Amino acid sequence: MTPHFKAQKVVDNIYWVGAIDWKLRDFHGYETQRGTTYNAYLIISDKIALIDTVKAAYKQELIQRISSVIDPQKIDYIISNHAETDHSGSLIDMIKLIKPEKVFATAKGVEALKAHYHHDEEITAVGEGDDLKLGSITLKFFETRMLHWPDSMVTYVPERELLFSQDAFGLHLATNERFEEDVPQWIVDFEAAKYYANILMPYSTLIPKTLDKLSTLPIKIFANDHGPIWRKNIGRIIELYKKWSAQPYTMKAVITYRTMWGSTEKMAMAIAEGLSEGGVSVKMMPLNSTHRSDIVTEVLDAGAFFVGSPTLNKNMFPAVADLLYYIKGLAPKNLIGDAFGSYGWADGVVEEIRGILSGMKVELVNDSPMSAKYVPDEKVLQDCFEMGKKTAKMLAAKISG
Image (tube, rainbow, N blue to C red; front, side, top):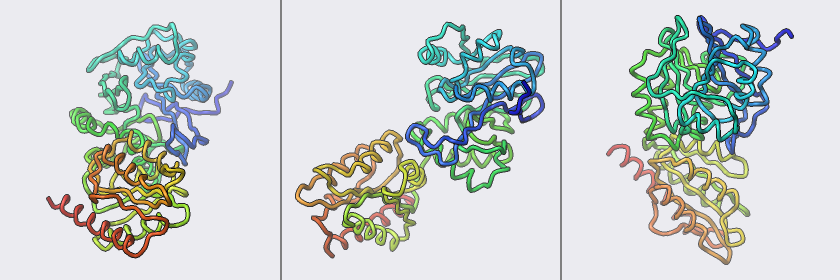
């Protein structure tokens, strides 16, 4: 069979042999409106190695891309940097097809692959700093536990100053362009931020240590597992990761809400006006037209976060609950904010949201809930406006202090 999916050269002796998923629109709750890629890499030396595989449904694409360079059965080693099924879904089938000399993963990776696939294949554990000689090319392994799974590791090629960074520095973007400099920068920046916010943000405290570790290695290429490969702007993505992991206070506020008859929306508008008067850039994100993963992306570089909900059947509006439980798990930090909303005959929802925000360590602006019965009057709207102005002053103090 003549392959119609072709490998693409990354550098001498190293090829991209992954798959492009043009259809993907949801990645466990994260809206991927531009699809994604599942990147795998082939290294040709005295010994031949395959770095990661692809999602199970894309196995034939992987096989055809490999076949455009070599017979897959000539592969000597398979490296599993990460056991998540979008990278390991075809691994066991590839092992059976290739019959490699060895398959490598971290000790946690060995456990995870066994638990996922209940297989009988032998997988060899590698540890921090171990290396594998392929001939003129060397692979060095470094564990990156909880970035973003316990099994995660990266693989470094010193002779090419190239790092197979698995999910780190990734972005969900289906594209025929293999390198980020060939994609419009605004798309790369947006999708990289969205990826970080929705996948890596819970592990932000670990990012600086990993960046410090990587800074000891001369690296010219980040060959990541999703989206285009970083080659021209490595310094840029490293600086963005430093900023995103720190999540410093900024003069930006995200206001998100759901409204039934417009009352909660009026309160949101008043808060926004107060923030704006205080010099804060406002991102208004109504939940009836905004996906939760886009809200989280905007929160990544915000200093303030406000959540509004009407009361429905003595509870917060379902879309608000969905957002709060999604963002709570992502653990954003360094935020000022509060809740607001309207009710008819049963109050208490705003206080419930405030409790969730407090649990997320959001510093609350008000001492008491900002609630309106049925329709907010001028006093309530003025109070909302003043809450926005107060927030602006609090943010300015945090930034200057």
